[in-house]
Length: 168
Image (cartoon, rainbow, N blue to C red; front, top):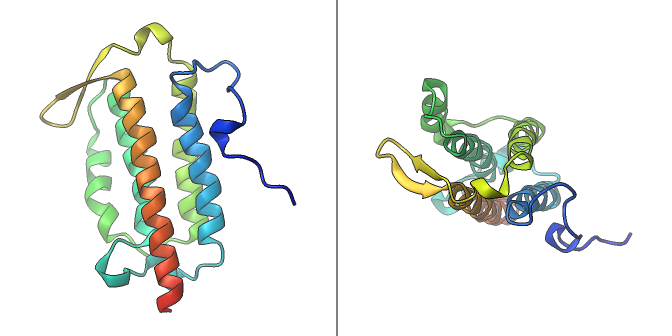
C-alpha cells in the first residue's frame, strides 16, 4: 500500500483561496493522523489520563468543540449558551466511543469547511473578536489559530494514546 503525502503536499484545493487552505489541510491531517494512532484503543485506553495528562478522548472532543467555537467567532457571532456549557463539560466527558468522537469531529469539520470555502480573499483582514473580553483578531488570524490549535491537540491525543497503550 502506497501512503499519500501529507494533505498540504497534495496540491491546491480547487475553489479555495491558498490563504484559506491551511485550515482545510489541518482538518484532513487531523482525520488521518487520529485514525491511524487511535486505531484499536479500548474505551479505557481512550479515556485514560496517563500521568494525569488529558486523555486521547478529551483531546479529540476538544478539537471538535474548539473548532465549533472558533468558527462562531469567525462568523462574527457570540457563543451560545449551549456552546459555553459544552466548553465546561469537555473535561468531564468520558465514555464516548472513538466512533462517536470521530463522527462529532467530522461533523464540525464539514460545517467549518463549508464556511472556509465561502470566505472571500478580500475579507481575510476583516476584524473579529474572541471571547467575553472581545479580544481583537482578524479572519486570517482565526483561520491560522484554528489550524494550529487543531494540530496541537492532535499531537496531544497521539501522545496520550501511545502512553495509554504502553501503560495498559
